[in-house]
Length: 370
Image (cartoon, rainbow, N blue to C red; front, side):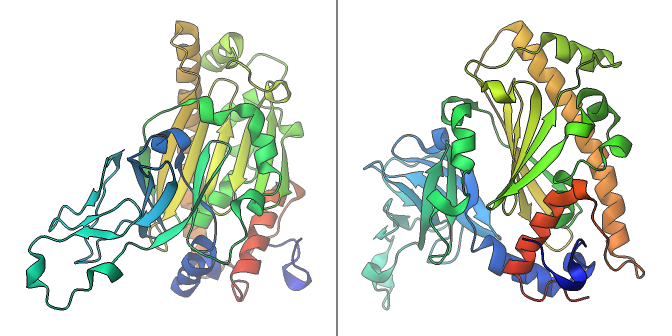
């Protein structure tokens, strides 16, 4: 539901993108209280396997313990604050800090301390790594640091039902693809959530997708965006080759065959659904004007030359789209920092942006103050 009054049909004010106070409030009230995507279920499928991530800068380790239980623990040693685990891998029995060798059981309880007799005031039984809520939804593992947030099963509304036919858990997951941009995280999210800029900013997408049928549908804590294909060949050879050779993955849902589909999960996770592969893309705010990102590609594993070529063309096309978006976001970031811009108005094709801004208005009181 959009906010009534002077802000109806309008964007957040520029201050929401440039104020250190707003940024800190977002970390506290948005990211720490949301279900944040962590990894693919295959990354922690076996006992001892772990995956590391961060939420609002807080280091987190997701792992499957020896009893098969999924856990999310602080990835910070209680001794001198060193990071315990790095990247992803396996810790068959214990988590061992690489700084001084403190070890923790897979449930987070302190297990052993080198030279323990030298710690006169250490109560070993009281030392454990903080644990956080963790769950799985449609092959994706999520972590929430708040006990007050509603359960993952209901948090995203009917999203699990929409994603189920994709059988994401059965797809092979590619490596992390890290990047970073000099933009406030909301500038990037705003850009993703609307197709209004496609005719001007993305000539390739305009050749491939039917802009008149490009529709964003906001729902509970997510927005589903349909980008149907055009019914005519692209003038660009590479794009035309993609159209000609495209062969959907096995058992890909029929209702999504003729489209590229985009999904935004509040607050900062994105799923790009293509017939030939599925991508996830996640934003990690790294300061008021800096955002780290991680992307991953999931597909059936087909090694056929045709399928590999289609996936390669897809990646090249969308790499070009990303480069165009970076230029657009560069301009927006500078404009938000200007002295004359206050706030903008939203077209009906920007309803996804409006839904996102309204979620921020609800989560961060005062964010709409000019």
